[in-house]
Length: 197
Image 1 (cartoon, helix red, strand yellow):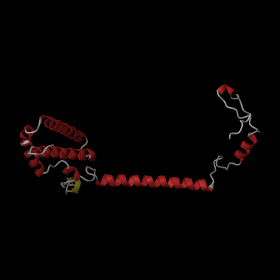
Image 2: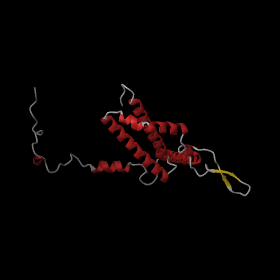
Image 3: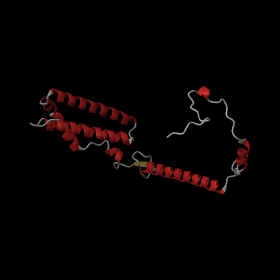
Image 4: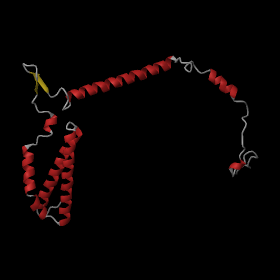
């Protein structure tokens, strides 16, 4: 059973039916003023001991973070390929710096493995014959893939020419070479009877 509606609680169907202003049952300002006077001296510029401890902890955290970043930058500049100190070698008798001829990771990214070059050359030599043995739709897919890989290699090599110490570009270039070898190997294997791409 539902109780009969209150006279004060009637259903409002329009915003016009709401009163234009509502008066609080009592004056709120004395309570607000009392709460404002009870605020600690933080508003006057003096922090409470708990607040001062929290601020000190924040500043220590910021200082520790900056020290970690500075240490990371210092270590990174010392050990990354192409770092200013990594190319200089011992000083000769006439006080000239002799370049260090050891191979770094930076140099290794540009030196091709002879086995890779031989395998790639062998796969490229037989590529046209293997492509001719594929059905036309598969041949079109392979040719599109190889064209995309060639464009990616050219773009990456050009970008590395502008920024040779960029490790991300070096990794992308190596991955592109691996993708090319994967496609060439798949084409070579796909020409076997009973296999496809």
